[in-house]
Length: 121
Image 1 (cartoon, one colour):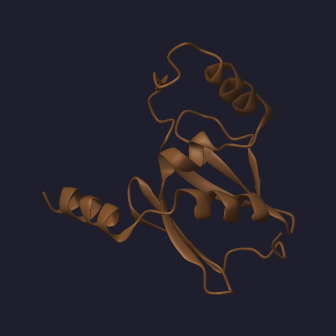
Image 2: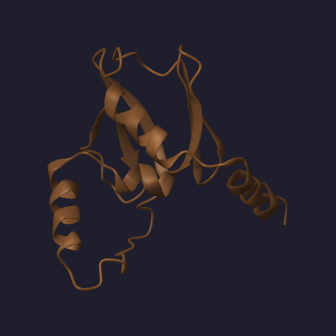
């Protein structure tokens, strides 16, 4: 368990990426798609549960703007809430949950290079 500290910095180095750094030195970059997939709201948790029971769970539903992060807002002294381009905004990412998501989905340097190459083309 972490000490529930907020990330000391959060940035968007690319339109489809988000980076965060914590005071203990941990830093990572993940895709906004992964952040959205891990939305902790009840509706998204229910959808993930349903998809895990489907015969073809690799088929994803995509809604325009669903992975477009519009804003991150502080919730008290313990969490952030994300507002997405499709209007979704009920998920509250506690600092512990956010840290777990970043650890789970941290992009490797070679994966980050792919985004740099695509951004330069």
